[in-house]
Length: 306
Image (cartoon, rainbow, N blue to C red; front, side, top):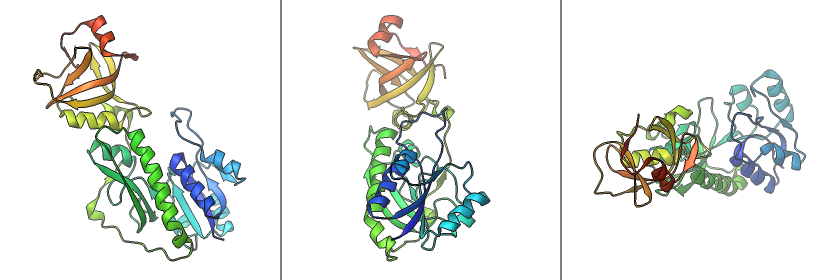
């Protein structure tokens, strides 16, 4: 029986830990995160799954400290797995497992290495993404690839919907390759790093809409940061506005000003090029539909304040 130490968090962590257990892997220790009270926790708990199966669990702020390294070394694992764990593992940890340390990444490497790959893929208008299992090195997401599974990104998919697909892709990729991996027969392919790039994390302020952009670009931003993420933001009538859902449409009556307006019971926004139908939005922190907006403010065109 192969022994593993698993670093895991989020839904991908839960699903991939379940795959290891289904294949009879001896998970000697789970390293996870304490939930941040300032973060919206919309995903499943790795700690709860580990507790269900009586697996010892620790939540260090830094997994690379000597006491954690010593504890993992004493377990003599065959593998270390990282499934959506948020801290980088350094060389001392990566050198411990006899058969290697592997990470599950939420893109089709070498594209979208680094942070929040699902959100970046949508922002850039990708039509396909997936999950990649690869060996870990000290540099993020650049080790040899063991398995990949692709999924489609449909034109109106939100980041949450794509993340749900990527979670299934991660489960499929790991489940398919795990027997060969445990038996030492897995074939790894070197990445061509020139075919992809590295992306950093995103902050709430990165969701501010630039209305000089095209309708398609703004639509991609809106769906990439839609709830449970912070949402795309702007200013209208001197109030903060969150745009939560849009559709790209053709509107021959559009003008070249960046405006918001209601017509025939539907809300629209003109962009640098093209028009969006604004399906869901909040104004001043209050959810509002097109009819409610028109009843309060009228049907004239309002220019965005940013």
